[in-house]
Picture 1 (spheres, one colour):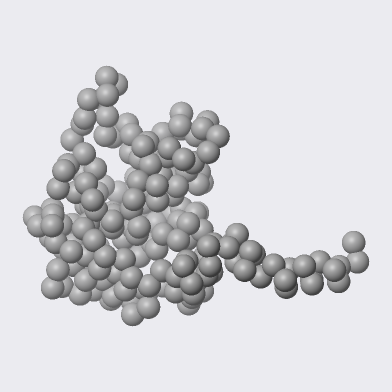
Picture 2 (cartoon, rainbow, N blue to C red; picture 1 turned 120 degrees about the vertical axis):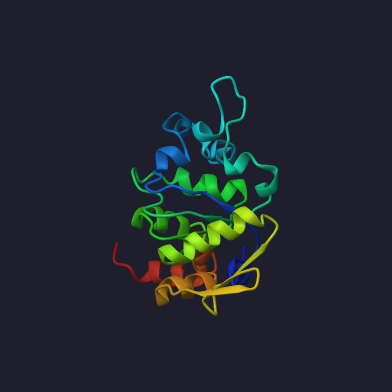
Length: 199
C-alpha cells in the first residue's frame, strides 16, 4: 500500500451513538478473546458481553440495532478506552467497520493505538457530544461527515469545529500513520542508513 492510498482526508457515513462514561478496553473487547493469534476476527468480538447473552441471544445495544448497523463514526462520551493498553480494542473497532471515533475524552494509549491503525480520534466538548448523540438517536439515517484537513464535523446541517495536534493531523492527511507502509516506501533510505552503521 502506498502513502497516497493511506491518506485519510474525509470520512462520511451514518453515526453510532454509544452513551456512557469510562467505557474501558475490557468492555470493548473482553479479555478471553485476546488469546487469538491474529486480529482477523476481532470485529466479531466488539462489545461482545454488552451485546450478547450467554446463550448468544441479543441484548439491547446500539450495535445490535438495524438502524445503526452500517454506521462508520462511533460517538462516545468521557474517558473512552480507559483501562488496559490492549491494542485489540482499536483492532476490533477497525475490523467491525468503524472508521472514526468522536467523544469528549479518551485514554491516551487507546488514542495512540487508534492512530497506528488510521482511526481518527476526535474530541468535542460535552454539550456538542450531547447534541450529536441526541440527533443521531432521533435521526439514525442522518449523514455525518468528518473533514480532517479542515477540522470540521458535519452532522446533517450542523457543523462542528475540532482541532488535533499538528503531528496527528499530518500523519492522517499525509498517509504516514502506518509505520510499516512508511518503512516500505522508504526502503532505499533505510538500506542506505543501514550501510553507514558501524555495527
